[in-house]
Length: 79
Image (tube, rainbow, N blue to C red; front, top):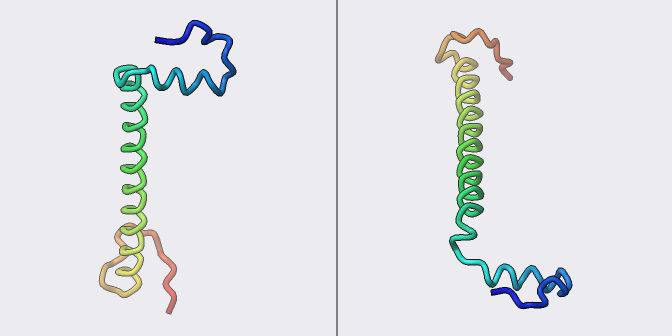
């Protein structure tokens, strides 16, 4: 329950009072959205790192002559 003079309190005092009186049910949608965005961000980052790793492996194998350049990327090889 909020105090009667809640609207008269300065903003820096209103925020802790509101947060302390909010239940977990009030925060559940916010926590779900933040958690979901965090998971999506981590998955996207892992996919990006995996694609960089695969590109480096492809370049290395083509430059060593182990694989033909079947993607026709013509990688630059330092020899």
